[in-house]
Length: 263
Ligand SMILES: [Zn+2]
Image (tube, rainbow, N blue to C red):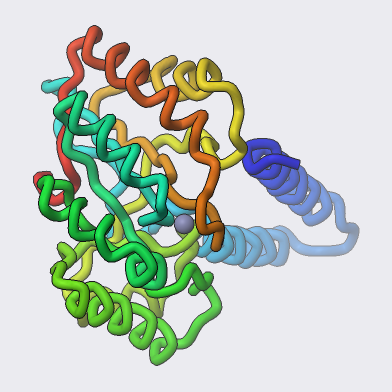
């Protein structure tokens, strides 16, 4: 099952569980009204807790940024996760031809394997932000583990001669309250995205173009990938083929492009 199908399956399952839970509580015999209210409130609290960890852009306290603010100007941002990889060089050629700067949430482990790519990213004016040291999921990690992961990532990039901006996107967008405590202490802003196009599934380029542009709205932050898992030479061909068309179509509708450290 592809990532898009998995995402819709889990959303559908979540809705079913919520509906079933509410119906169950309302239908239980012999429970006073206040008891039902308490059960629904507890269920609501558990649901919010799960959503907080699992939904990248969701935080009841509004600490996650996920779109470019301002509704007047037509702006959007391209963000790339899971690189750098050997294929990032081709992506950088395309971005240079399109004269667009993008935000790269890089993994330090990958950067160590592709230091030249990392340095080219920075030299060409793209924003180098953090996705982690490894691609470890952190929504169940302790504060110490999260701090180790982030500090190792910053140190790793420094050793390669690049200073990342203080923007951080947790792997898979998963998070817990410890992630917020550590990022606050280290001065990082957490960024999610407003539109994922599931390019890692490798659909045809025209599918990616449609997903990226069909309901394009001002402030959109697109999630794309220049790496995949631990693959040394990931196949990002569909995304590379789609990208010039995505840019062309958005520009024809009056969109400009910004990097996330500009907003
Ligand atoms: Zn990732």
